[in-house]
Length: 212
Image 1 (tube, rainbow, N blue to C red):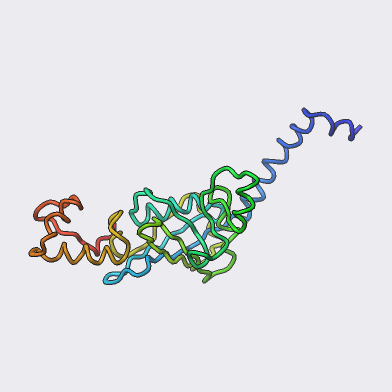
Image 2 (cartoon, one colour; image 1 turned 180 degrees about the vertical axis):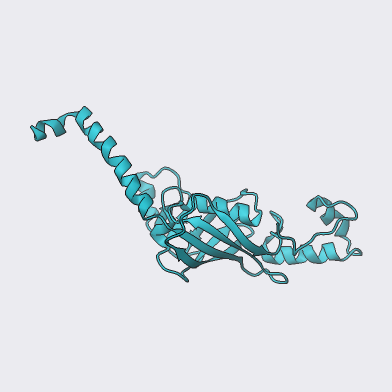
């Protein structure tokens, strides 16, 4: 009978194997493409931003990798996503394996490894925040410009951008502005040291407008 069949572990496994491809096909049919504009806040002259296409079924962990590559970061530090930065929820970050205690104190947090973009981004013009490096606090404003329902992609695409990515560990927006002043002033006492720290050759200058 059907009831006795469902009690059989092997039978349940066969049913599950039949259902999984069907569920994946349904998810695939509803997959969309998101067009994001991501701007690095508090950086001016020039501003630093990127426009990317990303599959809507990407996780936030994968989205982090897209942002890192698009800007030119080196993925060396911790990060999180949230509506407006610190103290705004839901906060989407990498979390350790949850235990009973951690679940209690971690209410309002989501895991980057399992949370999909489509679970958060539901309408065009929606904004979100990505903060990279808790020491330097590089604050990126994410804007969902378009939801492309008839233009599905499998891999992210970098469409456009402007401005060079600041060097890692350069002290956040304020530290970066100070760094640029020292690099631009050959008479500054720290000029030579900063060029060496940046890995620049003696006659090579830092191009803050560079975008590849």
